[in-house]
Length: 162
Image 1 (cartoon, rainbow, N blue to C red):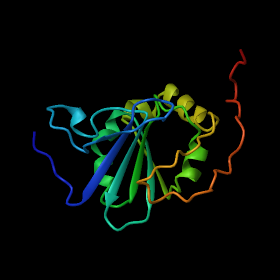
Image 2: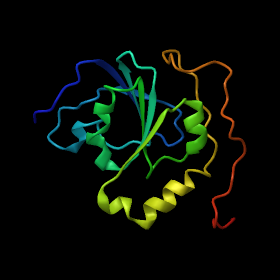
Image 3: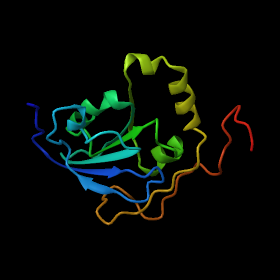
Image 4: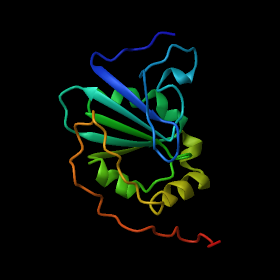
């Protein structure tokens, strides 16, 4: 399979666990003959760090359709955070604040964009457990001592209590 290669240095971190406790350093492109070529497949969170001189950060909320688009955003952002809304379980608002996101991008296939499940799941992420950023030694974008302003664990409207 032929594909465009970015002319900048990038590092990819995959977070396979929905709790986002551990990351795995990986390649942005994987030599496979299918859609896992881009990002290596679907994970709750992927962070693409790019050496391009930018100071901006983007958050992409996507389904598998977004895998082919996300690597190319690295040309324009210092960090591209890629969330698969189907498996991500943290609060989006606190994630945006903790990671100083400048741009929020939604990438879905046509059928998913119009599905009731997508709307409910993405709304749920507004009320999910508050995200707390784990400090990373290699992360140059975090500022020690900053905490997200969103506090508490809000209930999802209509969610039945156990």
